[in-house]
Amino acid sequence: MQGLILSLKRKHRHFRGLPDIRGVLRRFGSSIFFSVTLAGGLLCGSIVSGSIGSSTLEKLDLLFTANLPDRIKSGALGAFCAGFASDFLFLAAAFLLGLSLWGVVGLPLLAFFKGFGIGVSAGYLISVYGTKGILFYLVVVLPGVCVFCTALVCELRAAFDIYRRLVSTLLLRSKTSFRGALLYFLKKSLSCLAVALAAAVIDALLWFTFSGVFISAA
Image (cartoon, rainbow, N blue to C red; front, side, top):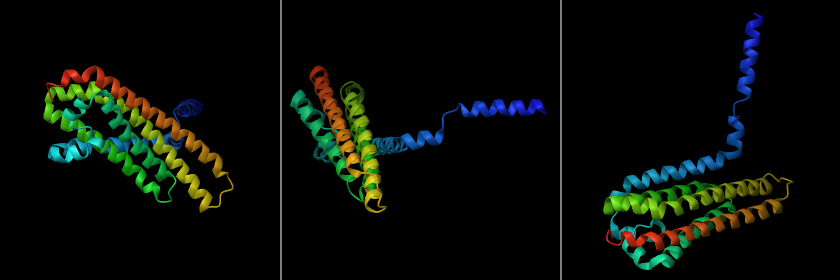
């Protein structure tokens, strides 16, 4: 009996050493949710990319980065402007949704739509340009995409946090100061915008360095 009690105590200490799942979810739950939503959009976009016409993609090139010939002709500056404009639109939308009482509905849709655009552009480049499309996406497009997606998830999390604080202040009459939370949200948003700017710079540098290799593919 004593041996059984000692064994249970050892197991109890062992389980106490495991990560606190609820603590992890409480701290990173929104980031995980938005990341999974973005990945789901990426999967859906890659699946339906074959059924989307090139004319439609050209109209949505600001979001999907699929009009490869025109992007290559525009050079590094064009890649920077197009990439930063698209990233800014997503960050601005997340910022405004965080300050809206109905914004919580749009935040996951924003993550899904960005992932959908990534999936569509990747699937389209691969289907049209084959192996060179794969290499182009991996070498030129994907690094900047990964950097920006990190910034977007952080912005979505910050927008969700400020939304909860807004609801708590307006509807639940919380006594916690909203001004401090708003200032933190503004600083967080500026940090995410700086990361998006870095992603656009990475895009421009990669386009300037490697896009000429793929001109023949276009």
